[in-house]
Image 1 (cartoon, rainbow, N blue to C red):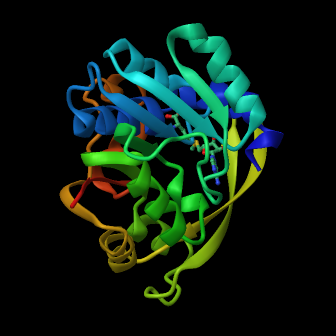
Image 2: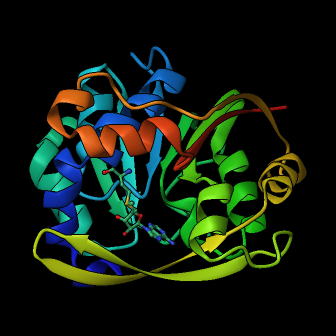
Amino acid sequence: MYDQFADDYARHSENSPANRYYDRPAILALAGDVAGQRVLELGCAAGALSEQLVDRGADLHGLDREPRMVQLATDRLGNRARFDVADLGEPLSMVESDSVDLVVASLVLHYLKDWSRPLEELHRCLAPGGSLVMSVHHPAADWEWAGFPEYLTTTQIHDTWRLGDRSVQVSYYRRPLSEVFGQLHNAGFTVDHLVEPRPLPELRDIDPRAFEELNTKPAFLHLRARTA
Ligand SMILES: C[S@@+](CC[C@H](N)C(=O)[O-])C[C@H]1O[C@@H](n2cnc3c(N)ncnc32)[C@H](O)[C@@H]1O
């Protein structure tokens, strides 16, 4: 999917209200002090969040399914971080067990239908006491967008995004909140922080409409979960 519009997405997400002023700040706040931490970033795309983590001192290993995204992230960070092509639906054979302090998964897990194996795999990668910080589309937002289908069943959504002057097709999964928590619990994670963020205040002057939207309606859900 992203292979067809990697460069367009990279340009768009660099400064888009939802990414720059809403998702990334909330992820960084939940991650806390990452200096010296071994961070595994999932769905790193072109490395915008990766760069912020590295600037804060993280020892970062980024993964993405799309080779073009990995290329863009590598071009951006050079030898300041390591990036690999990897599909989260498969075992992460390039990551040793207990070798990661923090997994960061910003806006990627909703592309996976099944979370059970991937979450088990993340638990394997994390050292004891490690954390997972993640964001997904807010279940209420996708439920409304899809026209209020039967809520308790996980359903696939097909959407059209505007990236600059281009329209692209995307598909992802909406799952109920109980499924989000249940899957984390089953994989051995304890959620210790849930955030429904507000956008950064400076967005009000940059894009008042986007600020109003993100400040009054659920868009993304942010969680921190610890290995039990
Ligand atoms: C919305 S973007 C993430 C944005 C990024 N966190 C940022 O702040 O710029 C989602 C990324 O997840 C990647 N992705 C989607 N499904 C994946 C999978 N199964 N395994 C690995 N990466 C995946 C896509 O290629 C894309 O780069």
